[in-house]
Length: 593
Ligand SMILES: Nc1ncnc2c1ncn2[C@@H]1O[C@H](COP(=O)(O)OP(=O)(O)O)[C@@H](O)[C@H]1O
Ligand SMILES: [Mg+2]
Image (cartoon, rainbow, N blue to C red; front, side, top):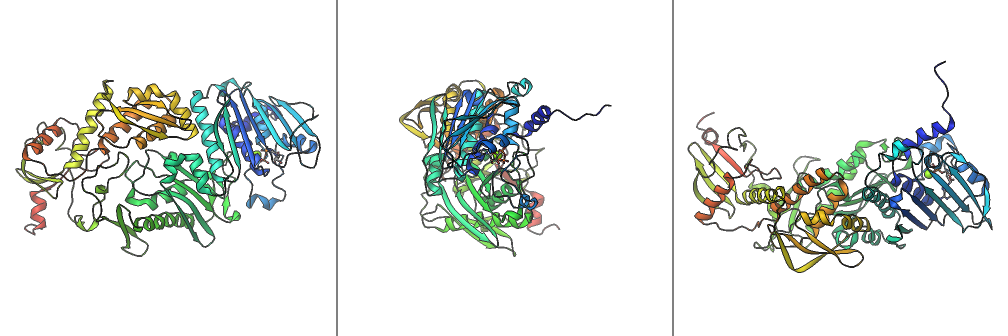
């Protein structure tokens, strides 16, 4: 016979492969169990990023000796009883897989005591082998200690990433659960140091501050929205705050953290043109739907869900975000005034205009959007005029920009130029951006970023996970022109920055770079990412104020553009120039059909 039934141990290890990918998965499963057990205190202790020890203590309902014996068996759960329960899951767990899976790939000690019992019990499972249950002294609640994860599956162990990366995954898991459960006290300790200690709070906003830090949290606005049986609530960033990746997107369905394409798409859709390509908002979004409307049993780690009425969910999430942004934009003091109008039923387009109080000489913050990036819709070209840049013609043609005839600068920011057969408009900001981008990238490549000390160091507040990450990457930051020094338990002081960056507030920039550090873990890719990030910043930070340029300055700008590759687009894909050919002009004046 070629077919045989797998041994129990082998079957568990295979199942474990789905549930336990890394220390962070263990932390997630155990913390979820603690929350399901009604704990109000959950303490996590790690050694060597969780690869040596993970210990989780809770004050939840605990387990009796009988329950403990069953808890480590496969498909043993207290959370499902009747068949129908599977379609109205209210707990975080339900598969009855975590404890046996973890027990099969590590050494696991569980001690537990329910409030009804005066003494606790203890059970050891070692690589799938169960020991005896002993009586043991224990506080009410449960402590589970996992040692030497993957010690018996070396192949899996090899897949673990650098300790800093594994630790940052744990921090992510920890923070997500903390965000969804503000009333629970969470503590995370690593190699004897307290990384995070989030005391119980009543308000979601307070937990937001604990987890994301005051700086990020203060930029987030609360919102709620209800439609039929779907309720959306949470906090979101309004323009001009944005981030280079989805690191600050936290989406929860019925208090379960998920990474759902529908929700993410819907919420980005809600931001519409407020975000530039490649930029993400910070959003903590709680979606509440009737339990029967969502299937959480589609992913072993339950990171994905399926909605019965997917398009309703999409619609509701988009609208919730949109209306929150509209409301915020109308609030007094908003820099960008924004009004939505229905072009056709169901269609919404923002119209932007500058608030009258905006100081035209202010420098744009290093981060995110400039108010200039959103032209007033009314002043946009009508649809039948095409503003295309013939890619094959313009870039790379030596001296193209310097060969143009300059007529004037109009509206404070456009250079009107012409070539023999066309009219060309150049956006002076986009052009400057492009040039700054190239210069900084050049310095980075040459490993010669010029630094400039700050007269007044700026302090940047970071979350616990970010602090750890940054501590280990100070040298990398320095190579990119940023010197940072520890400044209190949850901040760093920025001592110097690349000289090419203009004066301003660098805290958001550093925060973005830290986000990049956490995201990428090979040094080549990291380098690439940071280069792109910094160069983008150089480009964002160009002074955007409308400024009259003299003829010499205009000439110099065009000469600089000639030195740059692909000069026709700013690094964000905004065009540097638009042109109207003779044909187009003639068509516009109805000289030709
Ligand atoms: N920290 C804990 N406190 C109380 N009971 C727990 C705890 N962890 C696990 N259990 C019990 O062990 C059972 C099995 O846990 P697990 O393997 O994670 O499966 P699931 O969470 O899917 O039920 C749970 O259903 C629960 O009854
Ligand atoms: Mg569980």
